[in-house]
Image 1 (tube, rainbow, N blue to C red):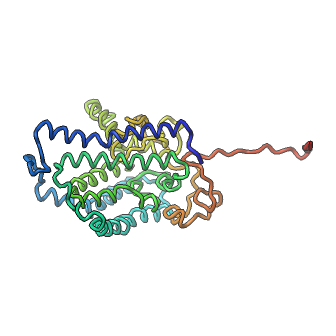
Image 2: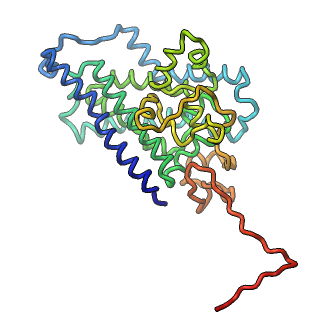
Length: 359
């Protein structure tokens, strides 16, 4: 299925703008070095950054077991508050748990182990090559590179119809919660940029900054998927509204990201064809793909969702659904992220048979 010409032009234009955004932090870093006569690659590093040992331990633990524990605790609060209602069926429950566990216990450790074995073979002289980069500049460069890449990865899975089925699992649930942050098809997860980027940066000597980006991003994306509207006070309390105005344009919040998971755009709140930002909502502001309403959709998911088997949603196209007509079934239709339009052919009345003229 071909892309609409105007959409293809917009993607090309936004792609060129993205190149400038990728380079901007690096250019700014070297400009600051020039202004202040700072040459860290020559060992002239007057502003070294080293966090206290207990801070390092906190972030390392958050990256390994701490963050999953926090997510589980907050998830328990969601359930205790009845925020999932009665929508967490057995099929949905298995899918959410598998999507949460498999990437963390199998895919990411596997990729990390073999990635750090592979890089020394192909880049033997590159180990710690960029450890001279000051921490805060490394943090900014990595945050932009990582999240902007994910923005595009996410956006293209919505705007290129044949890619949609690899991302569909993330949108199929008719509820919102922390579990949604990791609810993805295994192919989508395997090609996800963050794991590979973090491994490469660790090898190049930027692992500490990459770790901070990973932890902070996990907090933001998990909170944006949560059914707990933590951003609501920023819209309702007058003295917090200026902070809220900046916050909702800078990072993803429940209001902006819930809109992305809505099952319709008819209510003026849902916007599943935009609001693609993961950590930074700023990309949607820059590229004009965002909508801010400060409201939360009344319903979520996909209108034509057939609650396909958990294994089909997690491992399509390796395993396919048995649901007839499903996008995930054998030779299923490619409909993209929009609700398919049903075309009903007129049926002739039996009392008035039609005739076909033959030339």
